[in-house]
Image (cartoon, rainbow, N blue to C red):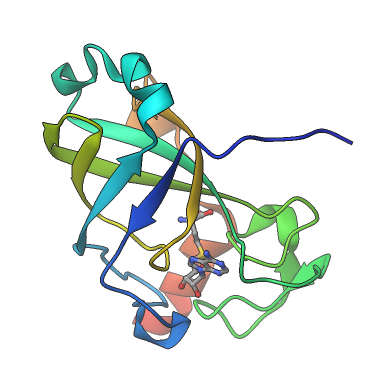
Length: 149
Ligand SMILES: C[S@@+](CC[C@H](N)C(=O)[O-])C[C@H]1O[C@@H](n2cnc3c(N)ncnc32)[C@H](O)[C@@H]1O
């Protein structure tokens, strides 16, 4: 077992899961604020230079997990580790957000898909060196193909 310390809280327009867009081709444009707790603020030094961030957070309003998930983007089941299901053995969420502005310990971001009050456990600059032609999108590409047909 291990213990994680929240470093902050998500301020989001979403108070219920039903408000958060889901399904194939969904875009997350909602703006929110990552409120970083004062003791961790020195750790934000130089973050302004990055356009996008990885945010690691906790699905704190989920009980339990399912090893086989039924994502809203497909009518077929998939293993939980092949999905972004909230119901996972370790309830860790990962969201890429655009950093719009920093105001001290407040990071104004675009692209939140978390509920208001969600605990943040880490932030890292978004960097990807994988060329698009080398990315495979697995069952999602197949699901998109079935819908398009
Ligand atoms: C499909 S998950 C993807 C989250 C993240 N982008 C990821 O890949 O880990 C997004 C859903 O998680 C749920 N959710 C968001 N915040 C939550 C929280 N704090 N506790 C439990 N469920 C949450 C909402 O239903 C939302 O639609």
